Image (cartoon, rainbow, N blue to C red; front, side):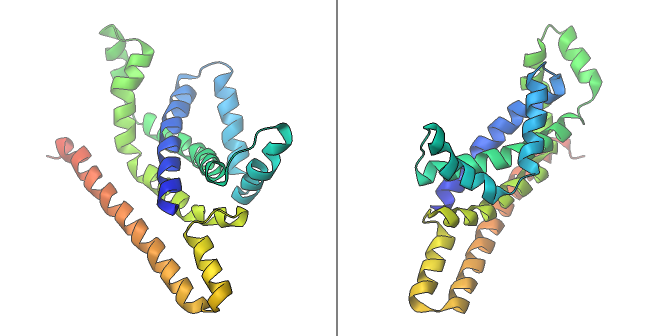
Length: 200
């Protein structure tokens, strides 16, 4: 359950982060202001409060989600705010001359963003994107507060039954450490291949 909810949330947050960063850099009217407000709101409110609002608050306006999709939505919205800034930082490293050259070749601003700027930005911002993804994986433990049976929920349930707190906390810590190390190794391999053409 931890892997499933985290994987889906990471994918959604990266895709939405790319879209949001592109909108901010291109300074699309209205949408840019909305994204700026969204990023500030998410980054300045607690994740647990966001989770409670989505799971317990949304039914008040007629929108009821399952535990699983409430968790995915919460983590995705939280991580998207950070991924927008991560990827926007990558976009600022793209040389202005590349945009001029792309437009001179007849590319539209959207085509330039898709084919030139975004690939460069994703390569540059990969470490920051990975850090946010790792934080998302670790923050999935908050979902046990609303009853989603992810790994922390199972650990707490076992502690309540067996009172073996030390053993379960050690297993929980080792499990998260293993998952994070696997993500780091995969990211390192990806970074190696992405940077390979740029090595002397």
